[in-house]
Image (cartoon, rainbow, N blue to C red; front, top):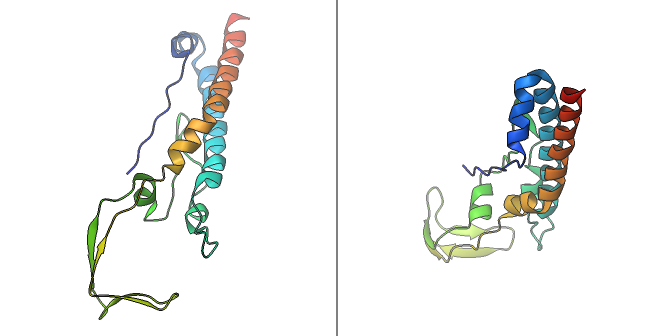
Length: 155
């Protein structure tokens, strides 16, 4: 499983505000988190690779809507079982026949034989790119939440 985390600047101010008005902090941070995760997911949908030969976007279609696990924890998930292999790449490996007589690509009428020495694949870190490209928006979302909380606490 791929686990990427985002660091929040201004966390010390947020902790102080949390002590004074915990529910306000949780509400604002929760909103900022959900908005940020949706920003990242939308970017991930654009960054995920598409099969140029067939135009297929199965990987994109398998990026599920944001799921809030708790008010302060959420996730973006790709239900495509091969997502991590696309994201992280693969080392050279051997593919062998399991239930068929030969390995083949039926769409292209290609027959490979009983064993294939796969050269591996280059990583395509589409989710990391989505996070990196969304960083300023995410930072802004949390900055706005922090300002709202500080205004509430200081009034």
